[in-house]
Image (cartoon, rainbow, N blue to C red; front, side, top):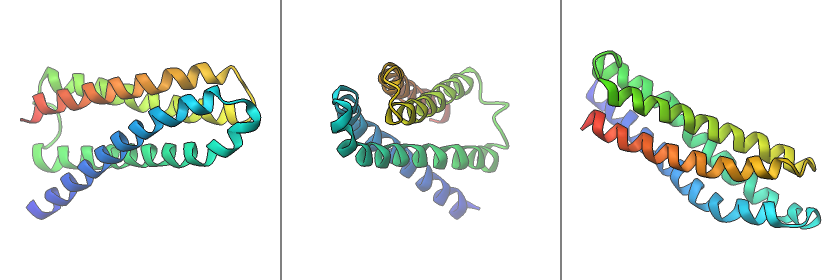
Length: 142
C-alpha cells in the first residue's frame, strides 16, 4: 500500500507542477492574447491552447489523486478539521477559475471580445485560490 500512496503523491506533486508552471507561463501569454488585435491572435492561440491543456491536465491529475490518497491514507476527510474544508473551498475556486479561463478563451477565439474581461479575471482567481489551497493543504496534512 505504501508504494501506491507514494506513486499517488508523486503524481499529485506532478499535477501541482503542471498547474503552477502552466499558470506562470499563461500569466505571460494570456495578456498578450487579450491585447493583440484579432488578426494577430491567430499566432498566439496554439501556445495559449497548449498551456490551457497543461493546466487542465494538472488539475485533472490533482482531482483524481487527491481523493484517492485521502481515502487510502486517512479513510476520508471527515476527521481532518476546518483547514481541510478551507482547502477544499479553494480547490473548488481553482477549478472554477480554470473552467472560466477555458470557456472565456474559447469565446474570445470565436471573436467574442467581451470574453477578454472574463479571461483576464480567470488568471488571478485561479492563481490566488490555488496558492491558498496549497497553504491549507500544508496546514491540514503537516
